[in-house]
Image (cartoon, rainbow, N blue to C red; front, side):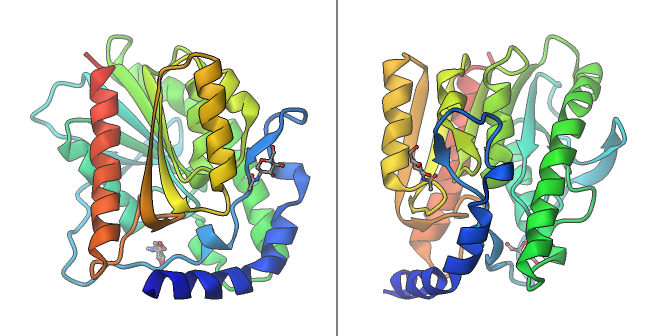
Amino acid sequence: MHIRLLLTISLTLASPLTQILAHPSFATHSKTSPLIATEVDKDCLNKHNYLSPDAATPRGKKIFIADVPTYFRLDAERPPTKVLLFLSDVYSPFNDSNQLVQDGFADAGFHVLGIDYFYGDSVSNYIGRPQEEILAWIEQGRRQADEALPRWLKGVKQIYGPNAKYSTVGYCFGAPYSMDLGATNEVVANAIAHPAFLTEDHFTQLTKPVFLSCAEYDRTFPPGNLTRAADILRETEKSYHIQIFSGTEHGFATRADPADSNAVWAKDESLRSIAEWFDRFSK
Ligand SMILES: *[C@@H]1O[C@H](CO)[C@@H](O)[C@H](O)[C@H]1NC(C)=O
Ligand SMILES: *[C@@H]1O[C@H](CO)[C@@H](O)[C@H](O)[C@H]1NC(C)=O
């Protein structure tokens, strides 16, 4: 009931922004391939931060790779064989919720690197601002990510070398970049959670195994489009796995209300299963 009520409210509030965000100029990498997940919208922007004062403290640090700020969590106990590239949502890898997710992957045995393609200027600075400003911010973020990712990845590979196993996970805004990498030999596998900005090409062009961690309620990647994505993956004989969590909405994989046991379970299970998916291909 609680969730349904919130959803109704957010749907009512969402319409004007959603219309503006449906603007095609920054929708996709491909102008011709049909859309399968649309733009960052209100569901992405107005998320609660559920961290309480006694929540865990992030344990990573800020470094620069190819001049791009990067959240870095190293477990000195482990050899640098498994490297996880974390492609964040609009809140940036330095958002406390996202830092804790990255720490979770580090605890699961990965060297975690979260690229900040927003260069410290995350959407948190724009909440409540006029829609045009938010749109301009998103477009700039896309341009910055397009420009920064290739040289950042080169820098990462100089650190860890050719024998490490690289995998990548993209949340919302980060999803298309994760899917792009999944079509190259840069990574052994990719994963996306509640994705935005995808076209059918992102699925047909994949060459690496993909994991989809999905919310039951997601206007950016609604059920019919998720089904279409699954059909493409099957028809084109990709290696894939899809999970859907009932009672969840867009954003569920990075933050959960501690009072909502279903939400907490879904968030933890998403992380655990993505880590296991990457483990499979990192031997
Ligand atoms: C779902 O897919 C259809 C067909 O490609 C597309 O027109 C629509 O924009 C998609 N919806 C979202 C929310 O991406
Ligand atoms: C982190 O993101 C949440 C939304 O999930 C936001 O409420 C909060 O202000 C952000 N924290 C920082 C430090 O930007």
